[in-house]
Length: 279
Image 1: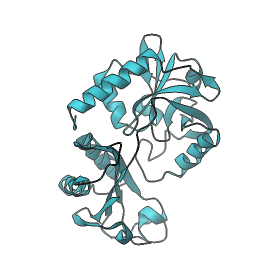
Image 2 (image 1 turned 30 degrees about the horizontal axis):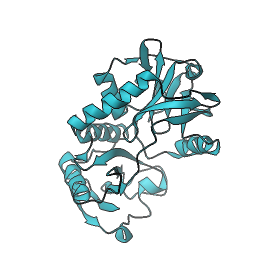
Image 3 (image 1 turned 90 degrees about the vertical axis):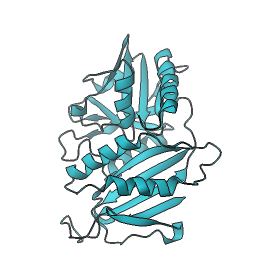
């Protein structure tokens, strides 16, 4: 693991045992922070510019002054340079930005925000995956709907629900009963000759891979009921670590293999991503 710790104006690489932040940091006490997760390859982090743009958007949504892009890029370069990405030559790069040290409550202090960049080797996902629906909803009217906030406890509970059932990811509806998103992924469904993903108005995160899929392929946004997962010809997940990931099981519904649309999209996305590290 490689770790950089500092503030929006600068910092340094530290050894993992020395990677410490204040126990009163608002990111720890009240989850007052935002983050980005990127795929790191031997060629560098994928889609860094898009991730930094979203980090800025998330920061402003929480009322935080965004970090300096140049500082974050330098920190990423320091962390990625010479990193051992393991046998799969793949890493998980996380940029975390919090409100810094604050009171033991929701009020913020006057401290400078905390910035952490960390990288660990990771393994590739299997070719196909599985999802569970859950009894909880995403609040599309929340002030942090669509923000990549460190407030992830809801996702932890939902993902454990899926894992307890032997499934890989959990998918949530919003309060209107519409298909929204996974705990760490966006969802697409194949309906005949259409590939559809929920709109941002559903409360889902504006995923970077989702964004690229909408640009690169014939994919449309559309409001869908959660039950579409049990009627669609194919179901796909997208995320920065999964890329395009065909689903072969939703709860008790199963497909024998990945469908043709998902298989083609997965291969085409990998090819295009290999051509440009920062599309």
